[in-house]
Length: 194
View 1: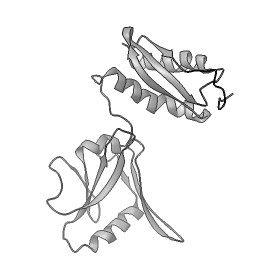
View 2 (view 1 turned 120 degrees about the vertical axis):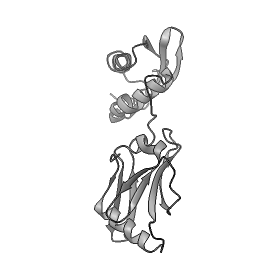
View 3 (view 1 turned 45 degrees about the vertical axis):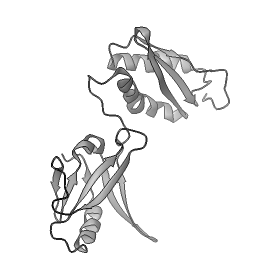
View 4 (view 1 turned 90 degrees about the horizontal axis):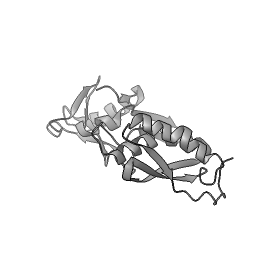
């Protein structure tokens, strides 16, 4: 599991902090609280010998060991821990782009899979136009009921986006899905993207 990157600057900063703890073998533990939700938070804590969890993944670095929480590992994919210095001081940052993305499998409920593809593939493209789309429900005959928001609400191209982009993508990814239905009130054009 090397999906997480700890920059040299972050390594040196953390090694210095750990050296001041006067605890031989102390490392750090990285985990995510409420992973896969909008409330996800990435955390780094000291990890004294024996405090690591049995399923943690040990990542041995030059000066210390990082323990990655087993249940957080998929959400820490592509995460970067960095330390930057500016004129005010320094700051340790953790960027985990997948922390809030739901983790799915082919056996996950259809609502979870739809939300996953909306968040990871569809909404990033719509965000360029100030818009997003959300799942309201999946109704009889496997139809996803969706609502446009932001710049997509009231946009004259919403139906084309729905049919040629969103519906096509979702049906390709989720074969049991039979179609999509838009319940957005497109008469409201105040923030529409044109």
